[in-house]
Amino acid sequence: MPLAVDVVVVGGGIAGLATAYELSQRGVSFVVLERAPRAGGVILSEEVEGFTIDGGPDALLIQKPEAIALCKAIGLGDRLVSTLPPRIAYIQRGGRLHALPAASVLGIPTRVGPFLRTTLFSWAGKVRMGREWFIAPRLDEADESIGSFMTRRFGQEATTYLAEPLLAGIHAGDVDRLSIRALFPRLADAERKHGSLLKAFRPLRNPIRHPQSAIPTTEGAFKSLPGGLSEMVKALVAALGEEHVRTNTGVDAITGEGPFVVRTSAGETIDARAVVIATPAYATSVLMRERDAELARLAGEIPYASAATVALAFKRRHISHPMTGSGFVVPRVENTGILAASWLSSKWPNRAPENRALLRTFVGGARDPKALERSDAELVELSMAALRPLMGISGDPLLSRVYRWERANAQHEVGHLDRMAAIERALAQHPGLFITGSGFRGVGIPDCVADGRRTGSEAAAWLRERTQN
Image 1 (tube, rainbow, N blue to C red):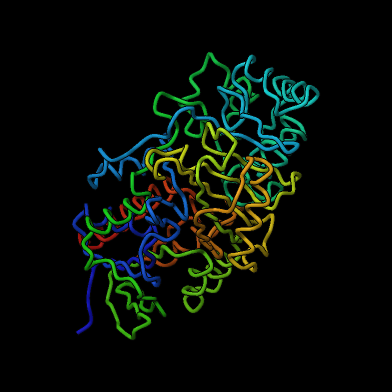
Image 2 (tube, rainbow, N blue to C red):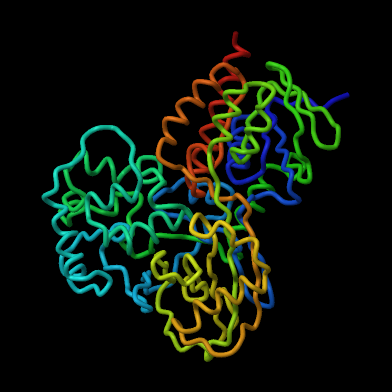
């Protein structure tokens, strides 16, 4: 007799797990089906020779509290740790590292003094950025790229050395294609509401209220867990019940109109009153192909970028750079082959044994779409070539690990919100079918947690309404 549950959640990344958690809190029966041998998607932490390495994301943004709240709900509240001071991030320019100005919001200055003192921008660039105060706002609702927005408001130098490596870089995307309204809506909203970002973020206002603030607080802007973010995944799976999270279980087909029949890669069939699809958009497209060609097309049009992270460990004395801070991002024009580097042993407590240092580089993305065609050894050497002259590294790494993330970075490009509106309209024609995940409404862990829990709540409400009727 086939298994019967209220909801099948297809995909065991953080969005799917968050959906399942919300269902569990509402007394809804469920099963999570994950094709990979482990849950968590891009969240992957390892303990290697005394080093704690995050192969994927390593931080939870405090100012978007949904992920922090979920950690507390599943018993991890007292294990959350803050970044180590001093909480400084850098941008490479001219072969040197320049600290982001203190008291800035994603590099956008909120105080004059630190901005005037920074060596990141030329004086001409600073003057042009200061003129943003007087530039008339764009008041329509039309979308535009991050690059177009930042160049229009702050000038080309700000786009080259700030928006491209920082705003687009954290999404491994193209600054001239990614959508400002989809990824940084508060910046676009600040322009419309205040006429200027400098006015919106001036000291008379409280910048900590802005969820994407980069201004340090006494706790810093981020939290993590001592064993890396995989602690969160393990605790979440334990809270759900391991029997309800099936790994190595792909989904080949979803048939029916509610009740649905979900056929797994092992040939099993599961009856479900509702289905939540929490897979990458391209996988969602395949699952929807027979059910709704238009929905499949829309989901399939969402682009993805591939990237890799390269973890490198050294004896601390073999690195001459002080590594005071969390790491740095690299503008495209620097042409070093890497997108960024994190100093994990300086960023988080107890990530490396005493007198050792742990670094991590990021390669690939829209800037280098063929990066993953290189071997592990080539990616390590590429990273070392970028780091050696910049940080004064002598000798070879004590260990190296390469983590490959094929088509793992959803690209919310210009027009993404319009596409999402069309997806929502198409989805409305399929009662009992829901979607969530980074390809659709949110890219980072907090956004995926928030959207997963919202989707779980909507599915539970839909089931309750059908029961009452």
